[in-house]
Image (cartoon, rainbow, N blue to C red):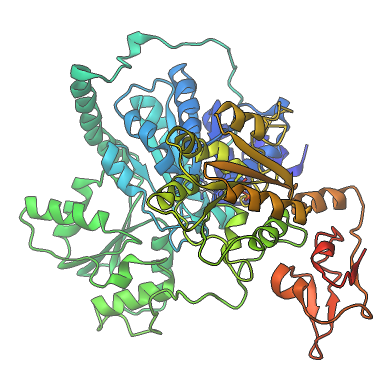
Length: 619
Ligand SMILES: Cc1ncc(C[n+]2csc(CCOP(=O)(O)OP(=O)(O)O)c2C)c(N)n1
């Protein structure tokens, strides 16, 4: 067993420097979590990486990557109805996919207990928005714990699990990117495996579990009543904390912002008192009122939206408190991560006499940096974009989806002019094809995304007879998030599993016209796409090639070092198709226009060979 796997299962207590995502796995083990599910997405995939270090036969729980976040939530919920403590984890926008399922959960008596772990992403480091999922707590009456560091990830998960089991209620553990990825020394308790039985304890006696008509009101009443019990529970456990500096000024905050705030205040001679909330929904009324009463002015310091601010102001209003409550006062306060620099600026704007002005932070820049994201050398998506670009006219409309192939929107390919979220490309493309007799519509979709949320758009295009071409970029893995298996991979997290053949699936859905080729066969792919866009119907081109990053990684593990292509300088006419149109980062351009190959990057895949009109690229 790998070292991390051994550590995660160690029976006596110990201290170790770990990532937030790793501390979470130990907390799940210590709490007796029996079923864990997920769909990959940053910042949480390393939770699964840590799980993978424990051999399947030794895992005291079942883990799966489900096909999307909604299904993952449903599997965890079903297991909890059988009495097993369960957990689902995914990235921020994953909750949008799971929402229809998720919002029902707090109405139901989840006897085994269930924790939903969310990886929110302030700063949109690896997401298409900065969505603040604390809203979902309010929306569904679900309590939200918010840890600041790996030690609190560990502690709060255990608290969330205990609370969830005690009340039979779903609980959210809201992590943010740097809390997931931060490393620190955490003190872990000892652990004793619980004896596992295989008894399904589901019983309608614990219900009702059919939230329909009249049954909904008592369910909602229970959910609302539980909120005050939860408030008291967190207070009794003394999870909220107070830094008392005997100041007339106070700050209320939570999560990682708290740590950044302490850093900012460190060198300041005058320090306001700080109330750090462990749970951000429901907010602890009693604790807040006491804090407001004992300060003249209180600043609410929260990243992203103004949820604490609105709750706290409404509490103060009801209590007729006269404390000056200062919330957000600039659009900039709603955008981006609350780094120490940003906090310094906000505090200066709030209390100029308290906080000297630091460097002004402008609104996050929308300029693309010098190093824009790149497809890897050998990437089949590059070959596909190069081939497809040859047959599309400038006025044709191309729709991107989420995955490595999103990068096709960048020069030199410029394929993908609109992007929404996972699985949306076919639906958006269908809309773009309406009242449109002139401009061809081409949508792109990855294989993991096809199974995740892509199928309904495809079914709709068949059902409503839309006129567009969908290119399925099949690389046999969920590449963008770190090569998690998907139904096209031939294995799941735990064992080999029958590949679901995309072509057959599409045939079964009634797609009449399907083409398929390897993306390295560029002429063939160009021809197929030309044919497809010439047809007046919904059709699909499956553009296949295994992910070459994964391939190269496996080769390296086997001790095979990569080969390289080389340029025949006598044949090369310096027209630079390889660089400017194919765009592989392995090619280098010298000042005199000579192209050479960077052997550090080239993996010798040869996908570029076909692109050179002079046949100057050789293996
Ligand atoms: C709702 C949601 N869940 C998860 C993610 C994280 N994510 C980004 S791309 C992607 C899948 C990419 O896999 P695939 O469609 O196979 O394309 P590839 O990257 O392999 O080209 C995932 C899971 C997301 N952006 N949105």
